[in-house]
Length: 329
Ligand SMILES: *[C@@H]1O[C@H](CO)[C@@H](O)[C@H](O)[C@H]1NC(C)=O
Ligand SMILES: *[C@@H]1O[C@H](CO)[C@@H](O)[C@H](O)[C@H]1NC(C)=O
Ligand SMILES: *[C@@H]1O[C@H](CO)[C@@H](O)[C@H](O)[C@H]1NC(C)=O
Ligand SMILES: *[C@@H]1O[C@H](CO)[C@@H](O)[C@H](O)[C@H]1NC(C)=O
Image (cartoon, rainbow, N blue to C red; front, top):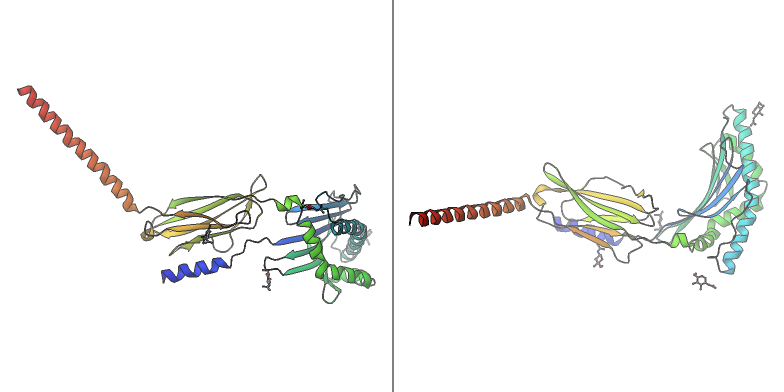
């Protein structure tokens, strides 16, 4: 039974992938009352901002040095061109939404229209794109890529949906982009130096004694990028944190996480347990083994100390006896 559990874990581990999931996203805002520029546009790959534009500075990020192919430079030109279109698109969306929500009496002093368009490349090679927007944090309008129609999430969005659908040529361009073309851009952004950074994790094990068990924690820190797998292997382990364990940011831009398991007292010293860490910065894995030490281990040490003390005592008595005998003679 125990053996089959271990085997099962090992088999599952073979399916664990640490290949990165890439998310190439664009974020737009059009707002009033937040102190933000009227329009902002940010293009991001995973955690890294690759491109920025806003209506206040009106400066578009120039083509970076790391883009050295013609296709890459062309793509950058397309991004510049679309910044102007997006500014109009989102300003209009903001105005339309404000007007509609004002009519239903639910407009406040601070209003924001936010859009996001993402293309995600999964480790299994498939990808997915979407374009959606929200007004004051609630779903507003999204693009249905297959039907090439906008979908209004609230009645207030219908006016803007109808306005946008008067321009089917642009919808076709957007749908085609999120259907396939976005992957080309993602593959260009993937080459950004900040995206290529890899930092290997430091792995440390510590234990905490409980009444009839020991909680063993594998602490993993200093790694980049964020995607990581931490797995405990060994018999009779009970997980402490059910479900997903948090990955938290460190101050230096790296990440940390931990995984704890409970080892029953009767198993301590009987088996070894391994914390296996898989990360894109290391070719294989980082494995730390924890063997534990039976409470019996302590007893052995106590007996040893006792034996030493006893031996010392006997020695003292013998020495004293010899001394007194000398004195008598
Ligand atoms: C582009 O940059 C990459 C990485 O810096 C380099 O390996 C490649 O040779 C460059 N290609 C050209 C055409 O300059
Ligand atoms: C909201 O409606 C009121 C009354 O109709 C109007 O005076 C005001 O300008 C509207 N505000 C916006 C932001 O549309
Ligand atoms: C690939 O992975 C994604 C995300 O985990 C999943 O939604 C999709 O179904 C997978 N596709 C295939 C073909 O396995
Ligand atoms: C970890 O890597 C070593 C080689 O470095 C390999 O023998 C071992 O099977 C790997 N363990 C797991 C659990 O992937």
